[in-house]
Length: 507
Image (tube, rainbow, N blue to C red):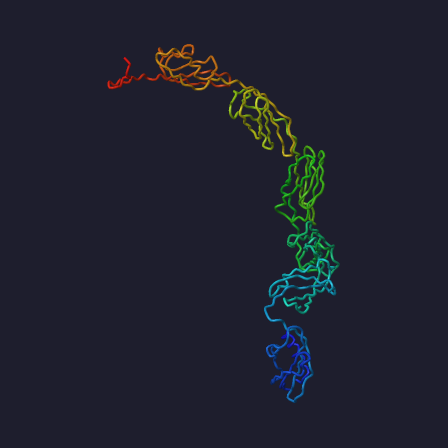
């Protein structure tokens, strides 16, 4: 701050003397201590004084005044010039905050804490949201860690709208030093940021020819028009408009719902500035609103035709007609096909109905066992008793069909029992093989190494081995078998040792 004060002082001192006189000395003193002036000899005009030329080392920290005058070769002194300055405390310093306010409202200063030896003002946040739109002044100052404030810096600025600036309309006309032709206006909904004037403008009512003066203005989303821009153009015959390629619904056409329809624009021809939509009569169908390439319809029942064509200032293009069909409620699915007579315990029995890929199918089994699932076909593990299987079809709109049902008849499976083992000796009495198999169904047949009569195994007449018991299935159930394994252990005789000890007293 001292160096800045000296620069101002020096400029004032030179203005006092004659530019033809050589300066021979200057002297300075601080505060009211004019009895302790410091004189410094110099030669020249002008002279340069740096901050290092002023010795303020004896001063205390705080505010001071420096007084300064020049002497020329005629020993004439200039008038005294005085400036205030601050002597900062010793040690490192840093910035701690800044303040800003607008216009003359210094009583509403905003204080913002900062850290560091410097700040980048363009990156700092200044809240101007409460100001009116128009020109204003911003006043700004910074404070250091010693509590000293810097000088106030002021800048003029213009308060604009809060939201981004977008183009909402274009107007243009042509004038060749005659009465301007009719004004043309193009509205953009939604607003845009850039325009391609080469394909946007239409001059259908202009005379054909070159060197036409085109005047243009843009309107932003704050209702402000730009200045007029002039361009020289050549007007040629316009190209015809093309036909829109297709109309696509953005959601399923469910009765009673509102659905957006979006068109695919023409692939050739002049550039459209809009589209004309209409809906031919349909039961409970209605065209609710349109915007550029999108229309919103309320879906009725049955079908309805929507038609759309491209438009611009030169006319209307060919119409595209698309038929819209509401999604009908699903009919009862069926018939249910699969094993409707099935053996108990069958794993993964498969059932299905004629498939419609636009529908979802939900299955339920009740009665002899309980099961459920989705998809088509559907499989289930069969229980022990008759059951009812049912299926419901659901469309994209969540509408359910009437229930389709069928009865599943469950046939009892034959039971040949469990495999078992019979151990017997060759001289034993006959044994019941059925007892080995654990409660098998009666009436089955035997096969094995020997013929089995009445379910008995006679070790004196039959060969040991594996005997198979078969109970015949009926209808959808296969035969069931169990094995009875007959084992006759061999008789082993051991030798008597002649040296064996005989118990005393036994004869």
